[in-house]
Length: 197
Length: 197
Image (tube, rainbow over all chains, first blue to last red; front, top):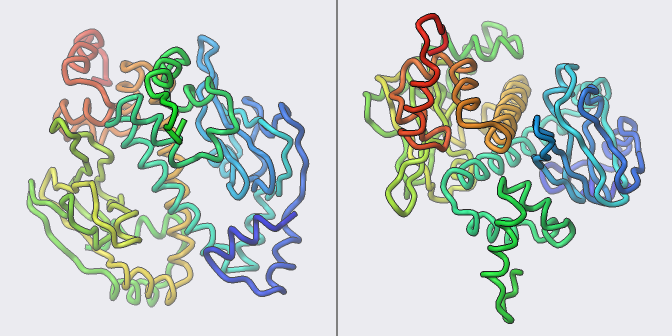
């Protein structure tokens, strides 16, 4: 535990050993088995979760019962419904473990105390959010600009640690295309020496 | 100048008068006439711009020459290509004034100096980015989940200060639908007592 977290922090701001010990006090470790939920829609998102091990997805369900995947989170990533977490309003999202997971959880009070106790954590959060904002902006650009095939090739290239671990119908849901469309795209792309597929 | 900026900051963290004076030293005011560009694709985005007055859009152009609008920014909002700004790589985006604008510009060195000189500015930036991230996540959810009509009604409801000021074809571009589809939706929605349209 804490290996991936301190790597994530040290990649952005350097913490001393004392600061790392201080930091640990604010997190609560939690294990989640595959198919367990960290958040279910209708509940308030009480934690911001860092993934030490495993893989999760956040998704929402429309009126017809179709699932739409908003985010995947593997080792070294954060996942939550930030709006519900910050406002205390109920969430429309679900967060589910796709593999057995080891998480480090920050509650809102712990998060605020940590920000006050360790200004470097505020810098870390700002840098993280900058990265997340840029990734979101690229996803929106891609959704407006790229064909389904281009979107698929981009996610395979950018996130091999995700696309090799989740079923194809979830990739389709994340890309906003049907499983049938994705299956057709993959058939067209498959060549014996194509390393991407 | 600085009225909207200090409102935006004071809504999140309180600055003293001395801190406001300090803050001003890092910004560079700039006026932009309608149709002028703050950034053109192929250039590096050298500034993060706060909008004191006016309205801008950021957009990208695909291989067929179609424009895709990524963001609008009116009074009280920030606009830039954060990736190009932070990395110094050339940008794929354009930022254009849709009205005469008064901007407050932060260069990357000025931004870093301001963050070091005024820790409250780091808190402000973190909170801004949280809000921007949440807005982006909702836009992705909407793009996956909502019909074109629902998307249109949502933007009219959420951003009247934008939708009343830009031409309909730009709203269509922002929503990722054709101008014809938007025109059809608006015709279906128009009723004499509908306050939204």
